[in-house]
Length: 197
Image 1 (cartoon, rainbow, N blue to C red):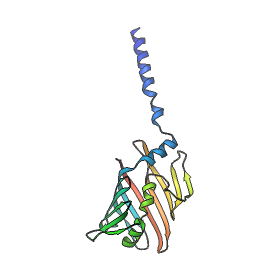
Image 2 (cartoon, one colour; image 1 turned 180 degrees about the horizontal axis):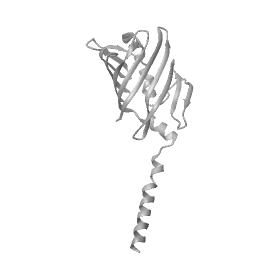
Image 3 (cartoon, rainbow, N blue to C red; image 1 turned 90 degrees about the horizontal axis):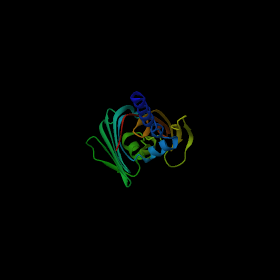
Image 4 (cartoon, rainbow, N blue to C red; image 1 turned 90 degrees about the vertical axis):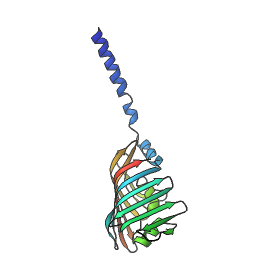
């Protein structure tokens, strides 16, 4: 009788332990909402650029706090160290020990100073696997409902290697290509570590 009772308790415990599991797996819409809800993070990885004026890569540290951000590039591409700091009222770029340069548009500023555009305003969405506000074409999602490709703001994007970070599914690799007037530009972001805040 004791054995039967113990077996019954074990079965009940196993069932109760298994019940919450399906609820922990978010649906496609919940995953998208979760990614959209992520407004504060630190991303560590690599940024690669191919353009008429630049070919190389840099270490990337991107800190985001709602609408404020700080993107730090170090290594060959950053020519030592480049910091892009942005807020709703504008963006600044400091390269090495040079004085900071201010502008209202980060893509225009990076093109002016570094020779290639970095679409930071849209990347705020793209880095989370989301389309930015505005016109979108060629949007494709995989069987899980995760973004695979889209065309937006003059860029063709491909998303791959999604990783689970807490309640989020976030891309580990984003490749963006643009036909710039000065020549084609390709920007690749490889995320090695996602740290939601």
